[in-house]
Amino acid sequence: MNVFFKILKLLLITALLFFLLSFTLKNEHKNERKINLIEFDKSTERFVTKDEILTSCFNWQDDNQIQNLDVAKIEDNIRQIPQINDVNVYLNHDGNIDIKLNERVPILRIYDGKSSYYLDENCKIMPLSKLFTARKLLVSGDLEGFTADDLCKLYSIIESNDFYKNLITQISLKRNNVVLITRIKGLEINIGDLNFLETKFNNLMSFYNKIIKFKGWNYYYEVNLKYLDQIICSKK
Image 1 (cartoon, rainbow, N blue to C red):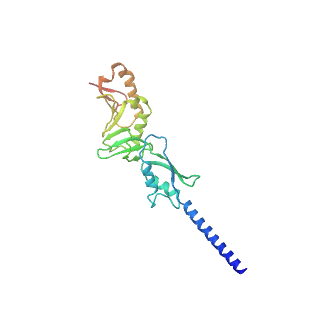
Image 2 (spheres, rainbow, N blue to C red):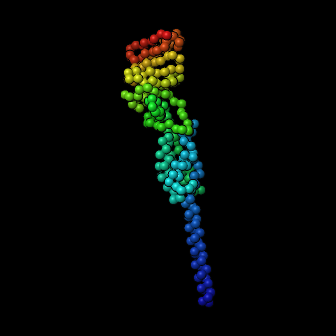
Image 3 (cartoon, one colour):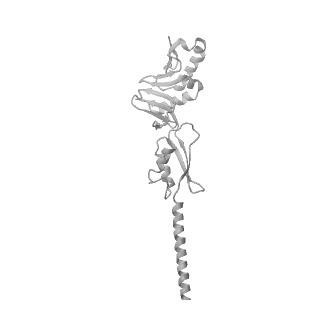
């Protein structure tokens, strides 16, 4: 009988050890997470790749699996990518990871003679991307004396009207004059400084309705809107 109990005790201990071992292995396997999905927003512009996202996720890991999952850490790593606006990381039903993110939206491309960058929809500086170049309204020239907010305000007025958007292709900055380069060959619009922009653009619309509709675009090479009470046109 004693032999029987000893054998039974040994079997129970063995079974318990087997259970504990299998439980440990199961937990270790559970802690090994994989990226299941990387979903971008609906924008067609892509400044970062999925590989770049993965590299960002694993830049603190030794392999392609995430152990001891830290969702906040993954989100923080991805947010370090300059072109990313926001990201959310989820643990899905199968224990793996879903990543949903959206990129920043550039509105202006700035060139100061030495370097180039974007201003995004929040009027913040956004670096260029090696992957994709966004075709945005170009601002160049002497940026001294102009703030990002100044340029974004000018952009918002141009963007508010289809006529302005279709006409203006570039903004050239000078110390005392802001010149709008147009799609019309040889025609520039001088708006002076960036004060009273609404009035100046209303004058531009008046110039189009009262003069261009009758004489055509090829009659003038410059339109001066610096002065609020008059429109000065220079003939070719």
